[in-house]
Length: 311
Image: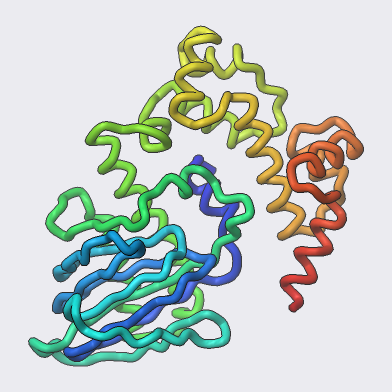
């Protein structure tokens, strides 16, 4: 998998949820803070985003606009910035109520497509943590064809569920998340890329990152990664550290431990197998490195995760 796909897979937990609703003015909804990430799409009509943060100005949303909130901050959505907000109440499984809507949307109505993703923030990938409080992708910005197609397909499935929709909708939500992030980073790279937008847009650093993600078990050296980037050891280390935020081998160790935690949470693979898949020659060396990173032994981490899922 590529770096973006890996970063999402490492944090994702459970099934994503989505809803398609019609709001008639006046309306206002307050979404509570959560461990996940969420998005809103204005399919028809208009709305105002009341962003997280006391100093944030309301943002007008036009038809086709997409908003993504990566950090789970509480926020509001309304027909007007001054409209009182009513708390949104999700279902027991975290889903939002949805409805089918036929016919045109009236002038005092807004058709919304909203969704939420569950994330494990204990090992949040910096590729996501450095995102702003919210991302606004106006419909007027070009190069959104694939994102629009994903929105249209998801909206159609929620409007008219057909056999197989229970499988199609989560797959479309996963696709939409990747398109949201890809669109944002491509937009950032077209400006003045810094941080992870710069890292993914830098051919040398991106080549090294892809190699680490493709084969985290390999005993990589800075010289080998620099050669992949076409740079000397020192020049590569400086550029990688400046864009990624940590030295190459420090990132390699962090990613190995992130992969190990995911394997412990999601599989029953024996510790020896996980150690080998994350670049450790012995179970003892792996357990020592894991405890140094997570503060608990691998077995305890696995049991704790299983207990949380069962509870």
